[in-house]
Picture 1: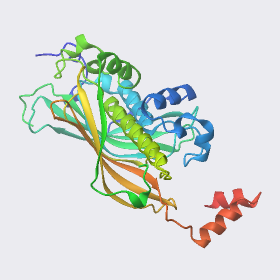
Picture 2: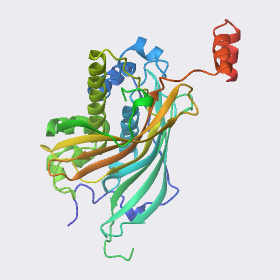
Picture 3: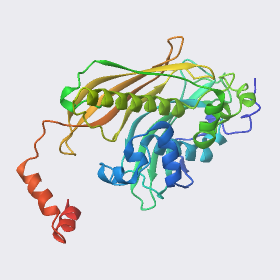
Picture 4: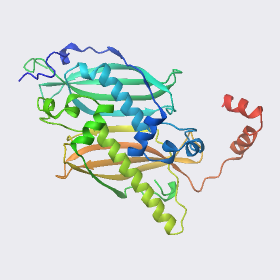
Length: 159
Length: 185
């Protein structure tokens, strides 16, 4: 039953509330913004500089969904690819605090705020993670609370 | 919404259309944004509890958003064709909740629909309203793929700016004084 992909990784029992994960950084280029917006969010204010200037965003900025996806990517690289992750359950209280403009660099931290065993599935625990993603000026761009499944090492142990 | 804030009916269901996911696009999205093995590698994914490749939840959500944008644009064109001026939708301040239920596998067709559950005038941005939207995604078997409670901005047609704000805006266009006022605001 061991999963050869994840058996060497940290499991639920190895995680602790309060652990702070430092994310890497990613620079958001105009090409990245336009590629994502073309496929998933083709509002003129994500595609065209003039339209963006006239909008509430005040300039060409990434789709909020792209900012979220890039934040997730940073978490995968720093954390989720190093634990026995079994997939995301969802998230809550996502707030786009400031737009991510062309050539902004985003990074930040993610904190483990809760750990609990799944009631119905002894093989899983649920890790709850708070994102604090900021731009190069230290201004907040995104916060959210993500819930992710993690394999337990000992499903037979009392929850 | 491409309708004006005032014209949006609470509880009305807007079908947004559907999308069939193939393995290539699932892997392409995951490579850029969610490179976990069960989104990336069909062979390795067999060892996961999914038993095979599944789409990143963020991918499914992005596709749902695209279909919503397409629906708004189509509605805008329809209104213009009728000689009506469409409303204006703005960027979203956030998402209250997003629950992923059943994974999306290659070949699955997911249908999306939107219901506006509530609306109110924005406190922070004059002339705009907030819409509370529930987005539901179902697969071809009718199983719930995800459910999201989204918030969006929508422009108010019947809004007149209070005198104080109009004065501030006019003063803001004066050189030197304008930037100073903006900094203080």
